[in-house]
Image (cartoon, rainbow, N blue to C red; front, side, top):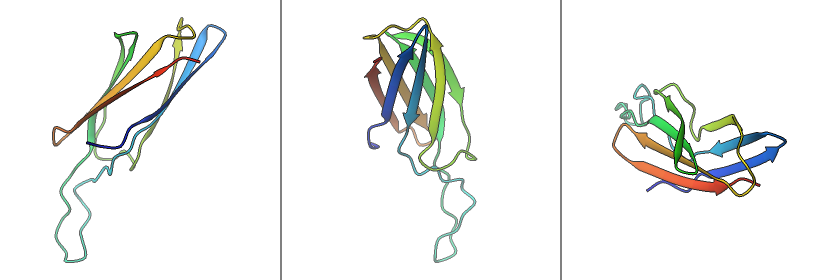
Length: 103
């Protein structure tokens, strides 16, 4: 399993900014190794976000997203102490999910 995501959710007034740093190699399938063989594609395909278990968003990604991707979005109505959950699935079926508390 991949390394844990670094998630920060900071409330300011009625808006909460969520910042997520994901650890993933994100190979496009177009690079070659030292022997000249193509490195197989390996990238995050779907990212989901939840607030207290309720779906917030779904993002569909492809091979053009950079290694160790960063995602930031704003939530209205979240309160200090609420739980923000982030999960991803890659094209090889690997999964990761983590959560953070709004501060």
